[in-house]
Each structure stands twice: as C-alpha cells, then as structure tokens.
Image (cartoon, rainbow, N blue to C red; front, top):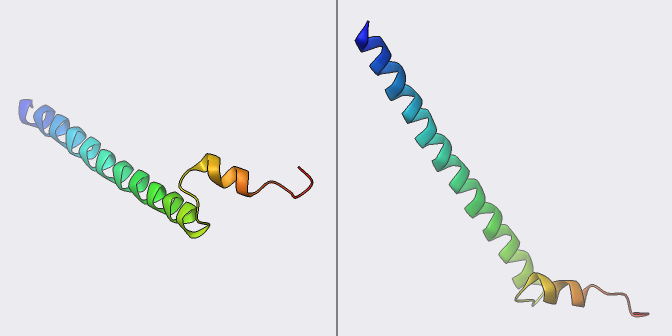
Length: 58
C-alpha cells in the first residue's frame, strides 16, 4: 500500500516537471516569434513597433 502512495507522488512530480518543461518551451517559442516580428519591421522594441504603425494623419 505504501508503494502505491509513493508511486502516485512520484508520478505527480514527474507530470509537473514535464508540464514546466512544455510551458517553458512554449514561452521561449512565443518570445522568439515576437522578437522575429520586431526584427522583420526593423524595430527593436514593442514601443518602436507601435510608433511605426501610426497612421500618417497622427
């Protein structure tokens, strides 16, 4: 019975580790995607991208 409890705890910890890994990869991928969009418009920051997107009448 104690082995079952230990196995459940170990499994839960493993699931959490995998979840953290996947979440980290998703965040890294999203940041790379956003950085790529700024670079493609010649901008170095979100603020600079916003300024470049203003209409000529502003």
